[in-house]
Image 1 (cartoon, rainbow, N blue to C red):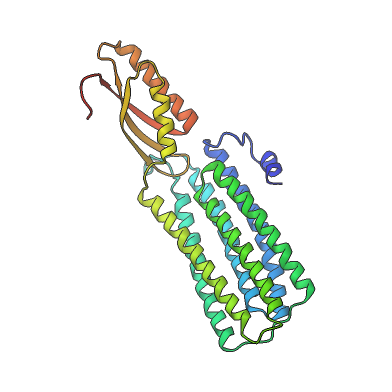
Image 2 (image 1 turned 90 degrees about the vertical axis):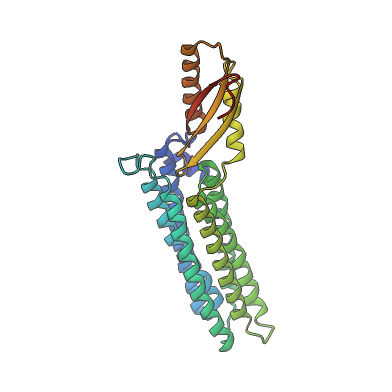
Length: 309
């Protein structure tokens, strides 16, 4: 299904280094997330109110936070795709990381509120009714969330999006949480402990953990992290494959958002090499790295024997 949607709504889906393609992926995943989460919120809220289950209601509001997250994904995709300007010469790609941080804060706040409700349910338990239709609807919810996990993970890998990867993890957590809720509704008929409130407490803990994990990843990207070893290896491989280059050193990369990585590297060339030929080859390598790897790299040349600087 997601492959069909990608082919239908995203032009040139293979060109993931293009800002417009990345924006299209973000908007697609956000719209699909809104539709799915709005449907799941309505279903779970109705089921929760009918069965008087705080665990199901908690799960429903978890889907509502996912809906707001999908909106932020869309806004982030639009903002991060803006071209560089005078105030932001390296583009606006880090808007995506800011969006992920906002999503994380929303998730944590909702988790804390649901935790308070669950504690109230434990101290003042109510009878929970588990109807067969309720269990069927919860089962359908699990399947939808597993599909959402799959498509968010796929898009996250395609465009290297931390927001989509976080959404995928959140969907997987939600599928597990809904499965636990369904099991609790059945088990609650045979035990006297306030199982519904306890499960709601567990779910709220999962929500808070997801929010904190997402926040940690977003803050880490905003502060700056170590360059991806795989990307480093690819850059060096492209440059050192040139017959003009003897070796490389001093690679530095700066992440200004997905699809916007800049950096510099020193390339050692023969001391007696023709300056014009070296210049033309270095230009070619910079263009190739930008096209194939999406990295705007400046290559400094050092004559052999001059030492590393």
